[in-house]
Image (cartoon, rainbow, N blue to C red; front, top):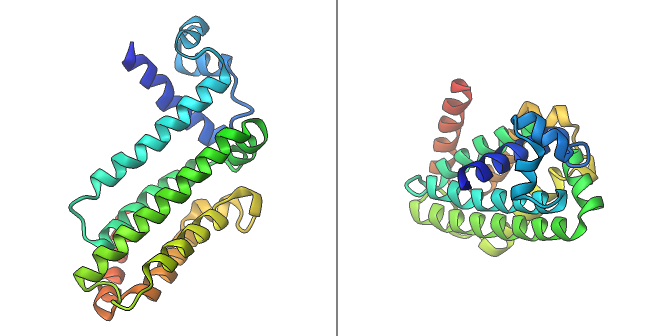
Length: 206
């Protein structure tokens, strides 16, 4: 039973990313996943419940990503996150945030709060690690830079701000420029050289 519930949540999340929330009905979910509507409603009483549970699953996935980065150094962690963000951007539909904000404002507010806290804590931890490893400058104001990273990510990748088009974001160039801008500002010479080498390796593998 739980396997089927997780199967629904995992796949609905991908549908929301691709098509947005408003356009995906409960009928669409059943048809796309090859399930009866009765089965879908057995686990989720209505669309709002499905949206809430899908986003809760998305939030929990963030902790799994952090576990996968445990043994990496500070720069490789940033490149690991880059790969994760790029994968998300390639399937992201700008209507997702718009639909969520308009149709489920409380869920949207909760999501933004979780994103803000996660980006801040993640950035802070990586900065502290990078300083210890000699990759990042020891004179950095960790709190200010962590908050700056929160603002940068939420501003640039929020559809409401329309700073970049979907095509520009999906191409990866914007993400790489934003990341490189950040890394060159915080890295020591040792860190810059290591970052450039590792980024080149990652890009060549794509």
